Image 1: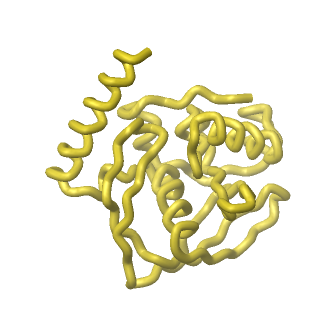
Image 2 (image 1 turned 90 degrees about the horizontal axis):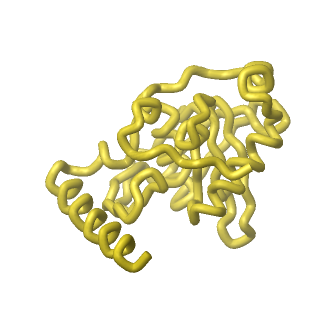
Image 3 (image 1 turned 135 degrees about the vertical axis):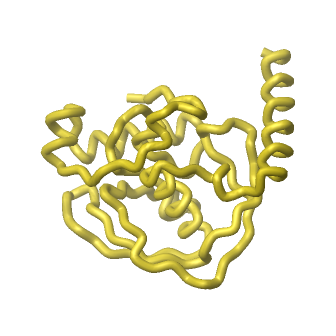
Amino acid sequence: MIYKLLEAGSPSLSVKLPETTIEEIKEKHELTLTELHDNLVGTMAATGGIGLSANQCGLPIRAFVMYTNLDKKETSLFVNPTVTWESEQTSLFTEGCLTYPFLFLNISRPTSIKFTYMDIDGNTQEGAYTGLTARIFQHEYDHMEGRNFTMLASKLKLEMGLKKSRKKLKKMKKIA
């Protein structure tokens, strides 16, 4: 199943999601963890993303998928993720978000993180990422916390980015 993405400003995107259980996902959303993974990955692929949180799809589930190996197109499901450590070293990198089409902002994030989560089999795991994989994880994790990448940019940089984004969207509508 391919989900329709919520638009920027949707109230459910600014809510910190509580932890969930496998039973809640099955009962409330009629999904197994494998189905949740497959649906989110399908939606992510169909929209050109490299990560996608369940709440971006209107599912109030504390979970997201992402490419854990871009070259091999390997994906993982992270349920109830928690960042347990982040490096003091940060890096600046241009980020985009499926919720904000054509908006790209330079965002500073820790270069390395450690985390815990529940995997697709329902097992609690620990992990660590560095570089781009750490950045993707943090971006999607922010969605679980009711935050998004626009909150990490200066007001001026955000306004400039939004202006470019609106211009690009307007141009795309003329072409279509």
